[in-house]
Length: 136
Image (cartoon, rainbow, N blue to C red; front, side, top):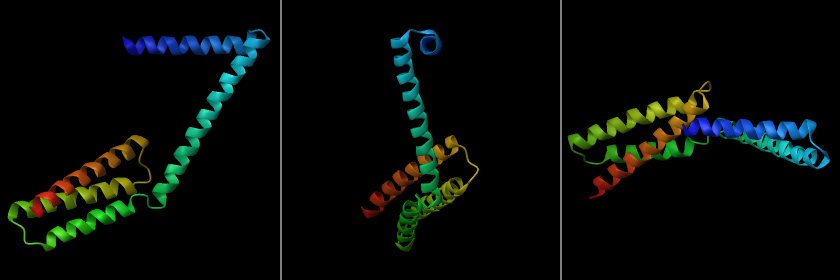
């Protein structure tokens, strides 16, 4: 219901701006032109941000985080751990491998990249918990 109201409101706003842009008086045309230019600037900024993020990912934006995770997992493996901790370490390694593959996928959609970033955050949380538990 709310979704439908928002959609109707957006359509009404676009219709009013479009009407003013083409058929309004001089003041309305000027105001509509400012709005259209603002929307163009926002669209351009979003495009630039997406291109910039793609370049960062290509340049290894997540490499440092993944290297940190690898170092900490290796440190945990080197310690004297019980079978339960060893199993958790193996699970972390499997998750890390999966996240690396997802982040390396050049054909992934924005949503898939977002999911991979969230998976990396969860992996860091699990690693932190394991490090704290292992330190005790």
